[in-house]
Length: 227
Ligand SMILES: C[S@@+](CC[C@H](N)C(=O)[O-])C[C@H]1O[C@@H](n2cnc3c(N)ncnc32)[C@H](O)[C@@H]1O
Image 1: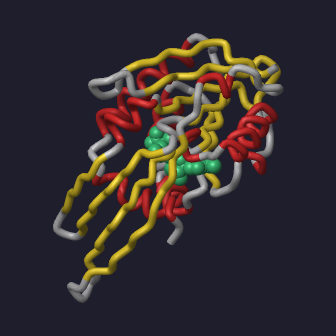
Image 2: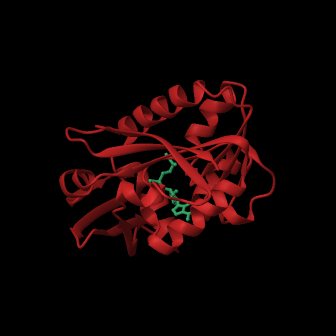
């Protein structure tokens, strides 16, 4: 199992449903302005945002590097593939990357990712993404938590140091025979300064809004147009 697949299996135990809904509302209201017909959701997870946009009449495609996430999208009848954004065919009116997706990328990967996103946009296309602020990492994400159900136990231990958040996930899953299987892996998330988005060759940053999902100014919404 990859570390992204472990995240996918653990996500429902993290207690982020309310924050996710609030983010979806924000993206939906921003996209409203652009009257889009087609949407590419990169890092689509289990497809919750695509479901909402489909109900608004938008044709959606999702990609994610976790096969577990994509299987859940396919089970709901969504158009989704476990491929890198650079491999996506066609062009879209809008691309979104919701809930920290850009923070999963280090500096080099981020540059490649943003160039690939630009190539998937129609001429007047818009790209919207959010990133964690430093407070988002140090005040919200850093720390420990645990949660369990009848079938699973999760512990999470996250440390923010040198602009990187290292989150260790330990998940015990109950098997049919009553024994538990342990899965453990680490996800690294990278803090990005806004400056890194201000002079891109392929995308123009047209708006930035810092906002609070939790009690502190923990996220910044970035809106880009294709150059
Ligand atoms: C915090 S989750 C958010 C999922 C979804 N956007 C949502 O709002 O529910 C981040 C997602 O990004 C995916 N991801 C991480 N790096 C990626 C990449 N380079 N390309 C596509 N997906 C990626 C992960 O597998 C995970 O599903």
